[in-house]
Length: 639
Ligand SMILES: Cc1cc2nc3c(=O)[nH]c(=O)nc-3n(C[C@H](O)[C@H](O)[C@H](O)COP(=O)(O)OP(=O)(O)OC[C@H]3O[C@@H](n4cnc5c(N)ncnc54)[C@H](O)[C@@H]3O)c2cc1C
Image: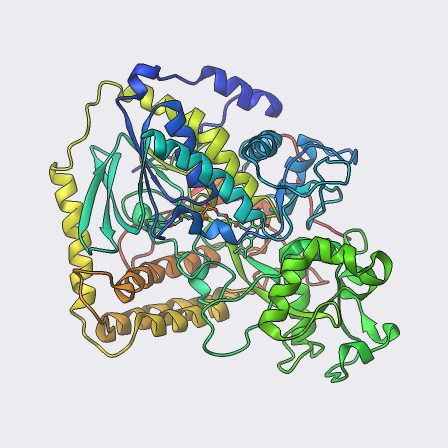
């Protein structure tokens, strides 16, 4: 059984990374040329890693299921990316960002990794600016910033509401440069289905060519998972529809442990579902809460139009409940507060499941032009979808699934429990504890990809310089391919009546009801039963049209949904085990008198780390105890 060793370096927190870097082994340029690395994923994390490793001299093969690396889910990120530049002179520092993240994550993250994420943040902005990422600037030309939830400084760099797109274009151009130079080979339209291990080490992958339908084998000396999160477990979410976590699940099945799967972020400000035919929800970035004020009517079931409700009849409930942070409380808190108001009958709109996000005061104070400059594309997006102009009346918003803090367990070197298998970006669990603060995902993904993994991976590869190129004719590759083929044939041969999409929708409903914004013991137990029943039905009644020998998007989806059943159970096991509330994990049984999350540090101050035991079998739980040396663990408060 793999042993959990987080490999946290000794010494003071602020010195750990510097000392660790100095102690890591190196690979000479001549040896780098002889070594192959596979990177699965081309989002901000994968593209940054692949470009950096290619530039360092390794032979890199990078995979994505989209038709271009540029279409990775990262392209959707809107509001910004954090860094401790302290350009505002608001007394920001590495320590402060570290502390905000630890507190924001409700004291369920590993101190050393979080500190390092904060430490490299400034370099990311320099790197991206050098690549030409058009961050917003002051009239003077200096980069400007704004605030995000859970902090009292202004440290978020942004490119209007399209920061992810611009940051991804930066990494993409670095990646393309290496592709042109021949150090990186790009494999688009590939769905990774299996990790190949040889003598316990990660040595390659099996993937399906989504255009020809062929199964392909690819080998390497090390494999990096940059495959993103699993937030589409709720079916409707702000994520790209294919962000399913199936690649991380493939790694888990092969022996990589999975950490904190139940820590899933529900974002407070999304455009509410408009009809039954929607396949995704649209985010209205947290950055909008720099200027937008959240409110509902003080009267239950108030059907007046928002502009007809006078100020004295409005309940600015975030400002009322959390005066210190107001509308910029962290996401878990803002989401639950919205749900509380709606459940109590104060929600707005036709369904009563929405709250207002209102810009009228900001427009009065700053003028429409200034507000337009800051948020134009988000306002346009909102108007296109709802037909209502946020310049004229408040937006209606409601919480939705958004980000997964859980993921593959990694040590300080970002290596999983499978030697030679690394996980970076949203695919790992590393930095956000039980709740991620806004604008810290692009930061973590870029930090992992540009500045951390390219340093730590050498330490492993230094011991592999004698390993020749790995043949894909080895029996382990054959077995992995057979495993993938068997799964595909099993699904194709069901020949039932129901599409994978219909199963995904039903699974999403179960997960939202049983393991969504609030959870309880009874609901979670029912959830497991419901997931199992639905999965049984899936394997009896699934219908996949088309064939395996060509492009078949129904098959692609079916493979994802099959993995989602497994991930769903893992989420529920984890939520059942964690008999406390922390961050986004809110167990109704464990709350303070005023409805806030009630942690149990005596029993649950650990990362829950799950080891696969077989489908529909309860996984083994390992615990990584969290030791806090620098911060004082206390009840989180934003009041
Ligand atoms: C609407 C929205 C707005 C956001 N705004 C912000 C923001 O303003 N600031 C911020 O910091 N964060 C934001 N986030 C979060 C952030 O965008 C993501 O966490 C981050 O981009 C994830 O990057 P990644 O590189 O880890 O993974 P992704 O960008 O999800 O990329 C995953 C890659 O893995 C590949 N892949 C996955 N599975 C397979 C497979 N089986 N086979 C082959 N390839 C595979 C995909 O093709 C893709 O290339 C936002 C998220 C959403 C949904």
